[in-house]
Image (tube, rainbow, N blue to C red; front, top):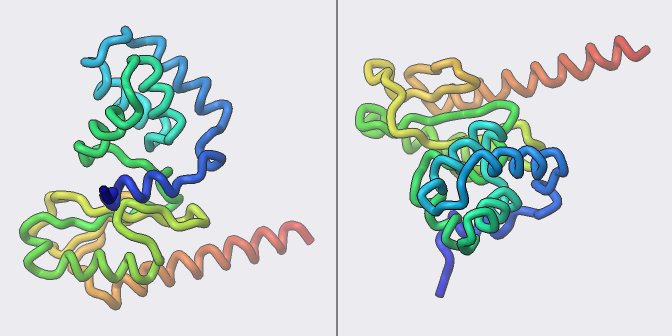
Length: 186
């Protein structure tokens, strides 16, 4: 039996990437606020994600242990709801609207362009931690479609060339910061 793309992505995560002692301690502290009842599963996952911005493999295991259920059951519930993410968000978060208005005028093309340029898929983070990308149902700016929200800034009337321009802007800014840091170090 094959795995879904979400399950395959989850299994590729390196344990060492997510097993930070501080995160484990904070997760255990959050768990102590909840009774060991299965109906607390979603509120627990929401609280962990609110605190850490994603659900790590370790956190899911701790939740399973706390509630006395299997990790596959925890993962099954978490993947059912699109509010949960399984990778730490990037320094720069990109959300591409896939609401009806954006979809009709090319939101899927914009998402594909970000994916291709960044070398990641929807819901993933670049290996350097700089960017994460996700599709969202609607950002409420239908008259500006297609729309992407980049670091909480709404980018309207997106086009493939605008995707390139946004990413180039980040690259230039990063180079400028590196030059400034180097100049201060000398």
